[in-house]
Image 1 (cartoon, each protein chain N blue to C red):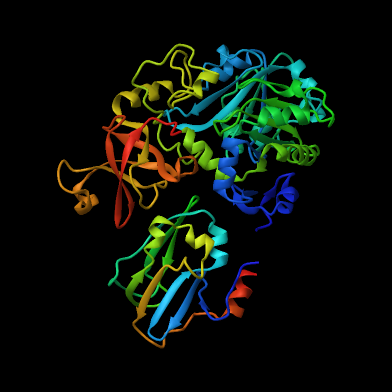
Image 2 (image 1 turned 30 degrees about the horizontal axis):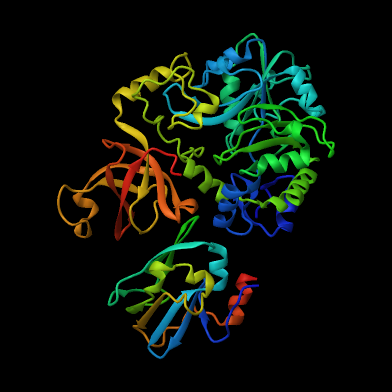
Length: 126
Length: 427
C-alpha cells in the first residue's frame, strides 16, 4: 500500500504539495513513483521561471516513458532539487523527502482549488 | 480493463506474482513484476521467463512450401535446413515492411511428435472473413515439409490475410492459425540451458536457432521448442497447449529461481531487444529502410549469422521475393539508412519520434537551437539502456551520416543531447 502522508495536499496527477504560506514544495507521490519505477532522469526548470496552472514544468523519465509534471497552480520557481540531476532515484527512494522536485512561490495565495486531502487521494488510488 | 481484452492462459500466474498488467495489442500482459531494470539485468546475468503467448503461431504445409514461402520472404528460405530457424521480413509490393517473423523448417512427422492433437490436422484457422475460409485446412493431416512461424501480436490477422491472398491457386499450400490454442513461454538468459535441462530434460536443450518437437519429459508436456528469442541471450521459445502452460510456467520458476530466474514483463523485453538493435514490429517498420544495404551482402546471409550482423538481418538479395524490385529502387534513391545513436551525455532520453539533427559546424552546443541545424531523420525506438548504466540509446532512419559521426537528438523542447552514430548492437 502506497504511503499518503496526512499533512500534504494532492492532485489527480499524483503530485503532492506542501504549502508553507506563499511557498509550495511539490513532488510526486509514493503511488506515482511505484507506478513509474526506475526513474532515470529528471528535467528541471530554471529558478526564476514563471508558469501558469497546468503548465508542464518538469519532466520525469522512467526506463519505460517520459511523464510531464504539470504545475498545480501558477507561480514562480524559487528552487529546484539539484540533487535529482545526479540521483533521480531519490524520487523512488524518498518521494516525500529527499525526492522533492520544485519549490515555488504561488501567485494566488488562496489557490487550493482542485487539491485533495490525504483521505480523498487515498480513495482515487485505491 | 475492457471486456474485449484477451487474457493469456498464464494471466492468473501473473496476477499472483504481483504483475503490473497493461493492454498490449488487446492482450492483458505484464509490463513488469519487480522493475524493468531488475528484470532486464536478471535476463542478461542469469535468466528471465516471459509469457509471449500474445504472439501468434502459424503452420504452413504442402508441396514446395519452402519455395512458396521464399517467394514472399526476404530470407533465403530454401537454404534453411530442416530443424533450423531463421528470421525474415515480409514486404509489400512497394517494398515496405509489413512485419517480421522467426520461422522454423520442419516436417509432418515432427509435427505429429509434438503430441498436441490439435496441432496436426484437428482444426484450421479461425478466420473472420468468409473469403478466406476456402483456403484453410479442413482436417487433413499435413504431409511433408512444414514451416512454423511466429507472427507478432496484433499482426496475426493482417499477415493471415496477406499470406492467404498470395497462396497458389491449386490449393497445394495450407496455412493454419494455431495462435488461439498455443501458449508461448520464452526462457532467456545465460542460465536458461541449465534451467531447461533441469525442468524438461537435456533432450530438449536445443541449439540456438534450431527447433524440434518437445521430447518426453517428467512433466509429460508436449509441444514445440526452438532455440530462439528476442533478447540476444541464449534462450528458448516453448510452444505448448494452453492447458499445459501454467504447469510449465510454475515448474520453470520453481526450479529456475535457484539459478536466478525471475519473471520478466514487456517493459524489459523492449529494452533487451533495443540493446541488440532488434526491430519492434510496427514501431520500427515505418519505411522500407532495411538498413545499410548498399554494401553487397554475403551469400547465404542466414539464420544464426543474422543475429550477429547489422540490421537488416534476414535479407537475402540473391532470390526473388515480393517487394524486391521496389526495395532495390529505394536503396538506390533513398539516402536514409537504419542507424543506432548512443548518448554522449545526460539529458531527456531518446524516445520514438524524436528528431535527429546535425550539429552546426561552429558554435557552442549550449547556444544552438534545432532551427540552426539540419534535420537528418528521426528515431523509431529509444530508451535508457539498463546494461549501460541507463545511458540513452536509440535507433532510427538517418541520412548522410556514418558510424562515429556526432549528431544531436532534439530530446525535449528545451534540450538537445549530443550522440554518436553506431551500428547496433549497443552492448
